[in-house]
Length: 104
Image (cartoon, rainbow, N blue to C red):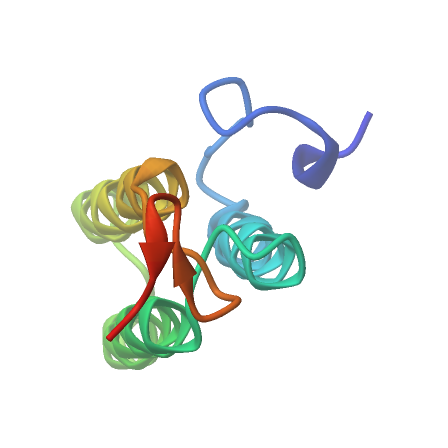
């Protein structure tokens, strides 16, 4: 099994898996859009957060990635992953409708 195939809580987020963690979140965002569980606005905001973490990672890597920096990136990615889950479970739908009727 790959890290992307595991549920978010079970995916290994060890020292060398930051990129895999980012990819797994991106994959979940894409799936959320395809399944209409995320609106385009939600997906855009979530992707922006992932990009911001990637920029931070690049800054951290300039002098070599320290253990605390890996942990910081992993915590940030965990928060975005939790946000993806929450957004996918809310009642907004990416098809222009709320669960209870037409969006105005």
